[in-house]
Length: 440
Length: 75
Image 1: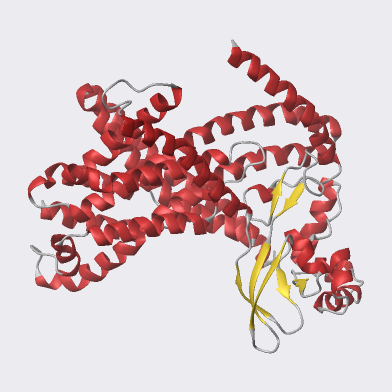
Image 2 (image 1 turned 60 degrees about the horizontal axis):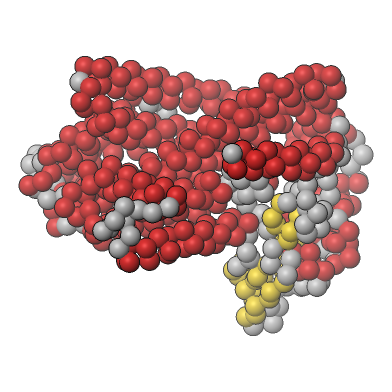
C-alpha cells in the first residue's frame, strides 16, 4: 500500500514537472540527442538547476603554453574557461560558434569571425554545401532556427598559441561512472559487513537488500562463473561480480530521469573490455599460449595461416565485447529518440497530425523503454558470461575441459549464420574455438 | 544524384540488410533452441545459456554493421 502511494506521488510530481518540459520542446530547445553522447554538462532541463536546466561541469586542461612551458588550468565550467580568454570555442564546421556571445566576448578576431565573413561572402543559396542544405531543410521541417553554440556544447581550443595536451575535464559520463561506483560501494560494503558478521552464512539473509542482491550474486556464481571456470570459480568471481554489477548499475543509471548512460560511451566499454583482455592473458596457462603460438595436432602447412589468425583472435574478442555493449546501449537510446523525434517532425507539418502521432509514439517509447530495461540486464549478463568464457578458455586444462568444448562448439555455428561485416571476425573466432575443441 | 545522398541511401539500405541478417540468424537460433528444449526439457537451462551467448555473438556482428551505417548517416 505504501509503495502504491509512493508511485502515485511520484506520478503527480512527474506530471507537474512534465508541463514545463513540453513548453521547452515547443521553443525548439529539444535537447535529446545529447542524452546519448558525452558532454560537459548535466542536463536537468525541466528543473531550474544550473543555468537553463544545464549544470556545467568542471573543465581541467593540461596545456602547453605559447612559451613552451607546461601548465594546468582548472575552470568551474566551460563558460568560465571561455570567459577567461585563454580558451576559445573551436571552429566547428560552418562557424556556428561565431554567433555565440561568449565567443565574441572572448576573442572576436579568431578564426570563427573569419569563417563568418567567408559565409557572408556567399549570397547565392545554391552555393551552400550539402550539410548546410540539409540543415536548412531540417529548420523548415522542425520550424526552428539553428541554436547558437554554447560553450559547454562546442569543442574548446586553447587560444594564443597554446595547445591542450590532455583534456582531463569531468564529462557527464565520468560523473555517472563515479556515481555508479558510489552506488556500488554503498550497496555492497554494508552487505559485506553483514556476511562477515555471519548474517547470511550461518543464518538466513535478512532484509530486502540482502535477499535481492544475494540472488544476483548467487546467479552470477552458479550460472555464469561456475559452468565456465570450474574449479577456478572463486579466483575470478570477484572480477566477474564487479563487472556485472558495474555494467548493470551503469546501464540502469541511463534509464532514470536526468541520467546518462556511461556504457553508451565506447571508451568506457573499451576499458572494461581491456580489463577482461588483461585478466584473460594473465590467467592464460601454458597450454593456452601453446595453442595460440604453435597449435598441436594440425598439419604443418596450416600453422602459418592459423597462428596469425589466433593472434588476431586475441584482440578481436575484447573488441567485440566493447562494441557490443556500446552499440546495445546506444541503439536503445537512439530508438527512443527517433520515436520521440517523430512527434516533432510530424508536428512540424501539421499540429493535429503531431498530436495524433504522439499517442502511438509514446506507446512505442514505453515499449522500447521496457525493452531497454531488459537489455540492461541482458548486456550485463552477456558481458560477464563472455568474460567468464574467455577466462575459462585461457585457464582450461586438458582434464576438465570436456563440458567447455561442447559449450564453445555451439557458438560458432550460431555466429556463422549471421551475415554482416563481422564475417572475418567470426571466422577467426571459429578457428579459436575449433582449436579449443581439438585440445579437448 | 550527388555522392552525399548516395551515402545516405547506402546507410539506410545497409541498416536494413544488417537487421535482416540478424533476424534470420536469431530466428533460426531461437527455433533450434526451442526445438531442442522441447525434445529434451531437462537440458532447457543449458540450451538457454548457449542460445543467449550465440545470440549475443550474432548481435555483436550486426552492431558492427549498424555502427558503420550510423556513422555514414550522421558524419
